[in-house]
Length: 377
Image 1: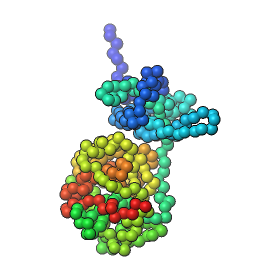
Image 2 (image 1 turned 90 degrees about the horizontal axis):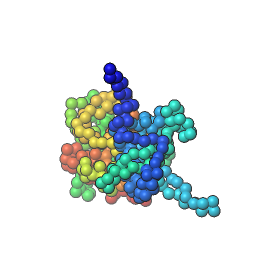
Image 3 (image 1 turned 45 degrees about the horizontal axis):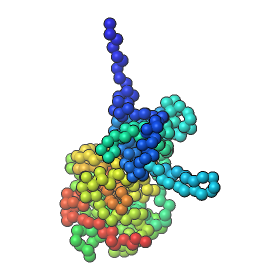
Image 4 (image 1 turned 45 degrees about the vertical axis):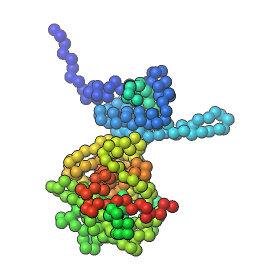
């Protein structure tokens, strides 16, 4: 009688989906192919492997303690014992664990992460066997910016509570060089629409910067569609008071000034080849692009209030876990504004893509960046 095969376990399925992932050992071919790649090709390969592992649900195969994977760079020292030292940044697969263990221990029993991942990676129209180095990190905690200046940290004040948040960019109506200037941020921060039933700002509510130069910046005046039952875009504007212009246009208010935006969904994929960064009231947080979703309900706040958002760019944190005060922060790829961070779920960051924010779907009249008004010093 033919013996029946035992049912496949979840581990078996993850291994199958990960296309013969080889952990903890490398072959001469894998090492040779990796060393032959340029730094740019290595970065592309590492980014592909990180997404492959996440999409296959195979992060746990890297070690019992691994809970997230991304890509980044690790400094490696070159030079001999003569005192000459040179540091180069090497692309690596970044593995996040709750607790670090010595790599000599067993990965399956203690959570230690293997030093290399070997996998066949598509590159330049063919698949190469690559032995990719790993680096192990533990998640950090969010810390308020230590700078005494405002630096994107804002609160809606008035009413019963002060609601903390961040701002993403300085904008104006398209073509209105001498018109009103606005701060771009989240509807649920500027209008407190998740804590006030009528989804409108109180008459006394104002956006206040936080820091040594604490002052009222202006009232929430314009909002994109947002709320239960709507195809929402969680974005709004605050019109700057003349007395606040010097604070907001000073170089100390912005860590990184956006000089352009993503033009469409294809452009989002193009700029995903580099590590993104969330600029908010906390220390900058590196992000790795996951995917773009459409017309999906996004959980808001500790109560996970479901709001249907028209289009959302999903990224995963490569450091700390996103916090409530991050709402309204800018997701940046270098000087390019990718999106507006609106919510999070564990390590995942949800943001509205910039090309949607700067279209008539969000604001009429449309808006444009007013970064030329910011002192770059």
